[in-house]
Image 1 (spheres, rainbow, N blue to C red):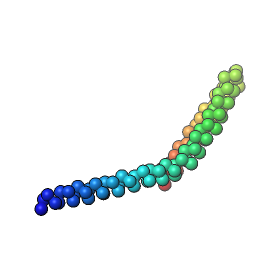
Image 2: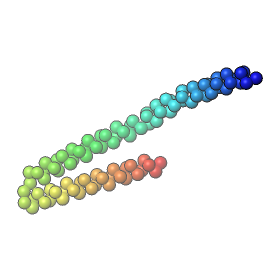
Image 3: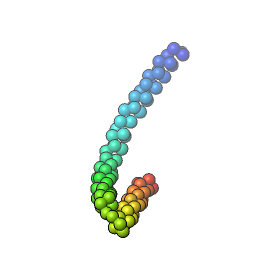
Length: 96
């Protein structure tokens, strides 16, 4: 009796394992497809923000005297603004 049960159990476990493994890529592909537009949006936002920072940095480096202090303040304010926006954006996605 034991000799008949073991092959049946092994076969059943193999079938269950195979079906679970077969489902995994579809779920991962679906999740990947759902996240890709968000990823593209984030990358585009980062590039735009980098361009803003580069411009402010260029202005800061070329400024002198009081204008340089103003340029430093503008750069810091932009960095803080971008950081807060990023934190809010991430928070909105984590709250879903």
